[in-house]
Length: 563
Ligand SMILES: Cc1cc2nc3c(=O)[nH]c(=O)nc-3n(C[C@H](O)[C@H](O)[C@H](O)COP(=O)(O)OP(=O)(O)OC[C@H]3O[C@@H](n4cnc5c(N)ncnc54)[C@H](O)[C@@H]3O)c2cc1C
Image (tube, rainbow, N blue to C red; front, side, top):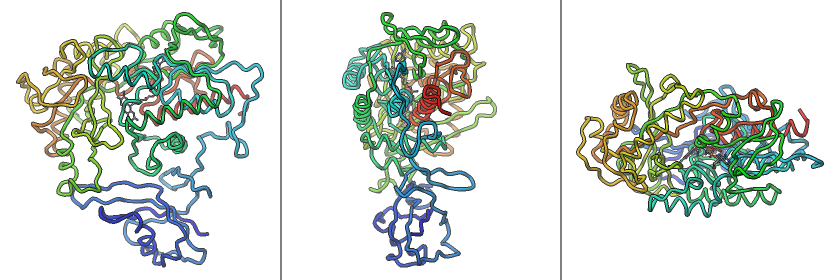
């Protein structure tokens, strides 16, 4: 069989995917019967306003052996040699020179993979690996180690998803905050109540393996082929539940409401962790996947001398528009076509005169702006949406880069935490002290006016009219105004009387980095593997999961003693 990858085949909005085979045959100048199979490996929407929107495909095509490929192809099409496995692997790695399909095994699979099987540890007297945190990084680290039959104890300070969902609802409906079970803490980690966007700039082929695992746990199959995959909060909960069951089947010991309150370091090596100030677990290997919001745990690590440094991050506000307005800006006269999904955007604006960049981040079509407080007396915003993305509003963070010299103070490596804290507290006060968020009409923010009223927003638990320049550092407010002006030039109509700003958005990425060596271990504590978003080396669901996977592989290699 002659196998190729065909890039760039397009379908108009009204054309059905069933016609792909026939269109492929036509493009290749052959008969449909010559095409044994034709499978989608990537699907993207090309909606550039100036042209009718269309779907663009990359296909895995199997041709009968006698078929001769044409020397010249219709414009926009490209043939590449298919280098994937016979199982129809779904992971496509693209480099400048080549495009190849790699089998769905994690990167550095050779560390644990031997002759098609995971190398399993012989249990003997092996101490358990303690994984701290059940976000994407901790879950994938625990899963990878459990597959290799390495004993794992997974510690999570928050509650299981069922109770957590009820705690979060109480917060959104009544403003009652559970400090250990909220949008940031609990099973599944910070992205559990999210849009479940799985986009990542990483070219790591193991991203395909992560997505494949998510599909096995109940995520929609489309995430394997969509150029901009997403799962949605409602579906993500099911995925996390199934992953928990799978981990338990594999022997992973999962303990909720188990907060790591101390770490014991002897002779520069990790020796034990303390839980809830009561119990101690001896271990020589800790995978630290605590996320970016565990200020108390960061402080504990600082007290114990773990090497850390401040890291730049970004802060700003959430902007919310009616979804119909974003559809018409992005799709023009094609807005409302039943085949078009709720429109998304990602826009950047360099504000050179202020030496800042402004960009949109974590856009949630058809979603909601949500309160994400995990700490009494602070307001933090973010966004989420369900799988259908069918809500009436579209929201996105719009943020400004924050450099370390903007916040470097006496707190040393953790000064970014104090900086975030300051603005989150101001937002809490401006919102009336009941976890409502300060909000302002976008046009008023732009003009420096304040009418004292806001229209309808989706924010839970509620929005209160406030001057948003009071809850932002001057450099952020100034750069945002200019950046939004430029965004409006790229997306005319963005600055609309129907749009609101809601604040504050501070949790874009960690303001701290835990310094680590090439082997993934802390620079100065052996056996401690900081990973995921909290380590400062990852951000987002996929990249945090990949970082957890990498930590697990390094730890497993050290434990099993194989290069
Ligand atoms: C509302 C929201 C929406 C988001 N939407 C998206 C999106 O659509 N796509 C995307 O890619 N990213 C999104 N993100 C970001 C994404 O969720 C994070 O990048 C990702 O969850 C980081 O994974 P992690 O495992 O490193 O950390 P986390 O997910 O933060 O998990 C860390 C876990 O560690 C636990 N923990 C902390 N300290 C301790 C301790 N001392 N002892 C025991 N347990 C502890 C916490 O309770 C938490 O469950 C969103 C984030 C939020 C808050």
